[in-house]
Amino acid sequence: MLVDARVLEALSAEFAKRLAAMEREIQALAPRPFNVGSPKQIGEILFEDLKLPGAKKGKSGAYVTDSAVLQALAEEGHELPARILAWRALAKLKSTYTDALPQQINPRTGRIHTRFSMAATSTGRLSSTDPNLQNIPVKTEEGGRIRQAFIAPPGHVLLSGDYSQIELRLLAHVANVKGLRESFARGEDIHARTAAEVFGVPIGAVDHALRRRAKAINFGIIYGISPYGLARQIGVSAGEARAYIEAYFVRYPEIRAYMEARKEEARRQGYVTTPFGRKCFITGINDRSAARRAYAERQAINAPLQGGSADIIKRAMNRLHRRLAAEGFAARMILQVHDELLFEVPEGELARLAPLVRQVMEGAAALSVPLKVDLGAGPNWADLTELPAA
Image 1 (cartoon, rainbow, N blue to C red):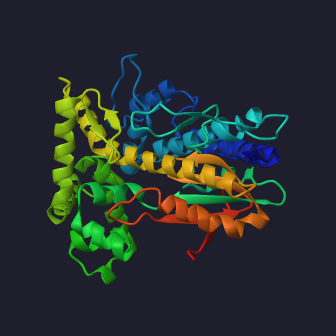
Image 2 (image 1 turned 120 degrees about the vertical axis):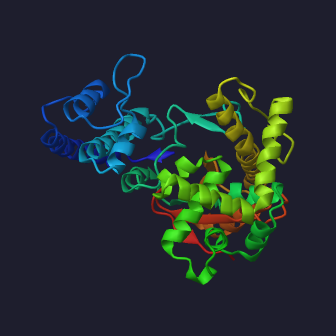
Image 3 (image 1 turned 45 degrees about the horizontal axis):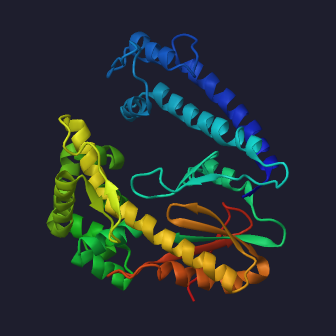
């Protein structure tokens, strides 16, 4: 991908100033000076000096101060761990992206050339390394500004084709979930529909907060989320979250049956299969450790869905690669980020290529629910304008 190093350098300088200001605020909240980058010193400040609850030591003898510990303290209203979390997040963006990416620009091409591995994941997803371009943040303001550095050359635009809710669509297909299949066929807002079903309100009465909870349940179920995990995500008690999950399974009993069948399949044969027949091996499914077993069970539930979406996008990539060559396009496919394909397109080709990308991606597999692709185009990876369906 072509990269504007000046954007990254300006961001790096801005982040450095913000980090310095954040560090001054953190030191003002602490009872004594300490190194904000030292997990050991953070543990001593939080659990020895301030005597905050939840102290736990690791094998090294130092207090555990990972993001889960700090997040739990922040949610209890403690300001210092919340500020440290924010500092860590920005420091990671600076070191991983704004500082490191300019060093990885090829001086001859002006581009960053990532490496893709075909067989590094158990689900079959492609993985990107040196650098990892599949992990550039998308949901935060800072992440969006980093994506602005990934640009199209003069006379070109970037075109993104992104599968919409592909794992939920695969779940509706493989588990034969009547309610979800009907919703997808009608083009309904699937999270609003789930909220109406689970919380027992008319679909027109579903507000943003209920939809957000339903979305967390929909995607959490795919990853085998626990009541505790869901409770923390949507800000309710574990009992309330457990009731939501139970209501979900009452409404969609096919999903619970699917989950139990995949766990049993993995226990019996050591692997599960995607809808297209590819095996995803599951290690630890019969382990003595309950924690390892539970992790393997979550993998068994999710692998056919994540693996199935990987199969579909690989089909689409192969077909698009052939069509680009056969139909004389100068456009190039330059990146795959799990459910998204990114193309570098001469401006004059966009009107012809966009409908082709949508047609090939949506036609890459015949499921009992329609595949839907969202298209966007723009001068850089952050500023993509949605392209309407024909």
